[in-house]
Amino acid sequence: MTSLISQRNLNPYEFTDKLGEKIVIRLYDHHDRDKLIEMYERFDPDDRCLGLPPITKECIKRWVDYLIENGYNVVAEHNGRIVGHVALVPLGNGDAELDIFVLRQYQNRGIGSELMRYAIELGRRLGFRGILAVTEPSNLRAKNLFKKFGFKTVSSDFDECHMYLSLTSPSSRTKLQALSTS
Ligand SMILES: CC(C)(COP(=O)(O)OP(=O)(O)OC[C@H]1O[C@@H](n2cnc3c(N)ncnc32)[C@H](O)[C@@H]1OP(=O)(O)O)[C@@H](O)C(=O)NCCC(=O)NCCS
Image (cartoon, rainbow, N blue to C red; front, side, top):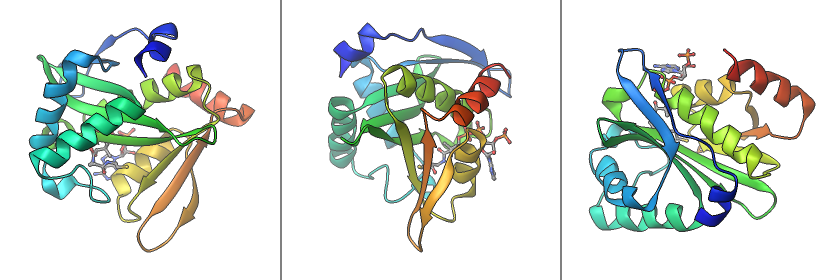
């Protein structure tokens, strides 16, 4: 997926999180694989969502490789370590599915929001029609994060809540423009 990304590149940028630490948000590059695997090895099992990330090193490697080969990946980096990650995986119908994870000690510091902003802009530049996010109905943090960026719940049952952001409707464009300047 790298050739398409490089044609429509987004620049890395640095922001100061709510604890005053400098965090870099940027596209994944192939040197990051080991650091991404290391992030998921450090991931708190209590923060897993719908069985992800996997727990064993072998399963983490397979899952990370799947996302690298099939998706567009963005990372949050602090002092050379990856502390957050969002992936957009094409669904084959013009939409992409989004997965997002931030290490526990970096949560509630604005990193998830910056990753979302970047991933949505990437999704738009890549020409996706919309982005689907699937989470657990009880995952209020994720649901609030998605709502903040204009995602609407399109279906929900006991196991899964599906939220969708259209990248083509004029109302979602206006909301995203407002968020990108806030
Ligand atoms: C969901 C997750 C990615 C959010 O990342 P984060 O870096 O903590 O997010 P932010 O600090 O940018 O907060 C974003 C929004 O989340 C919501 N939020 C954060 N903490 C919350 C909490 N404890 N309860 C309810 N909502 C909360 C708020 O709406 C917040 O926006 P605001 O600060 O403008 O009010 C992160 O908590 C995480 O990795 N969780 C575990 C894995 C997961 O559930 N991933 C989603 C699977 S689809």
